[in-house]
Length: 350
Image (cartoon, rainbow, N blue to C red):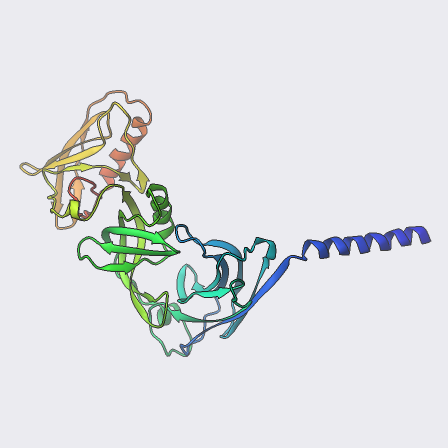
């Protein structure tokens, strides 16, 4: 019995040593997050703090640790981030960012870089967040108190660059330069850009449904006009704003089909390029996914566009053209609106 008890004590001690040894490299960042607005957070608010490696200028920040607090109460919000010290390289730069969400909507976010851990930076931070849009001064925050209805998305195109965890768009139409918010459909744009660029810092032309709205500055106080990517469309390698200055008319223009229902369109080698061509007098169109020819009439007024019941040749199409042709027919049947974009020989969207 005594032997069994000693064995039990040894086992408990050994287990405690293993647990201690496994967590010996774990360290903690502590901090508080506040905002200046005199409003209360709604009960369904969610606070997030993230520790990131922001060292590389040619790649997105790498997440090291994250903490989430549901119903964080009122500021200052105390938080801690547990991280593995062995994951930290003293040569690199690390930072903490914070935000508060209500559902899927961003309510507050940090707008300055809060460095920690290396190069003389501390293990403790005090973050002052900025409210995203909306009114201030309400005694209690609701969705209506905090967030204004966003502007309707519009088709935007311009030269895009992403470096040092910062994204920027120079719009083709106006020549104005905007920071790009890392929210909504930004991650799809980021992935496509990183795959398409030939070298870090290269400017590439992009197209997306989005809006220009006020967002907190990344550095310093206040807000600035920022591009928000609501729906990413495409990256155009080799294209520039200068090459696409001429306005293209809807009719008598060769429209290359590059996306259908947010999915990339790739033709088949040895077959025709997927495209659509609209003629004005009388209104009729011809289209193909690279196999059969689809023809029919259409009606347009302002920003509306409707394709009438089409006819098609009946060849058997090889994969993947058979599926692509069905997607094209479905897209034509569902088209209701027209977003007419300047680059004349690149893309059309319904």
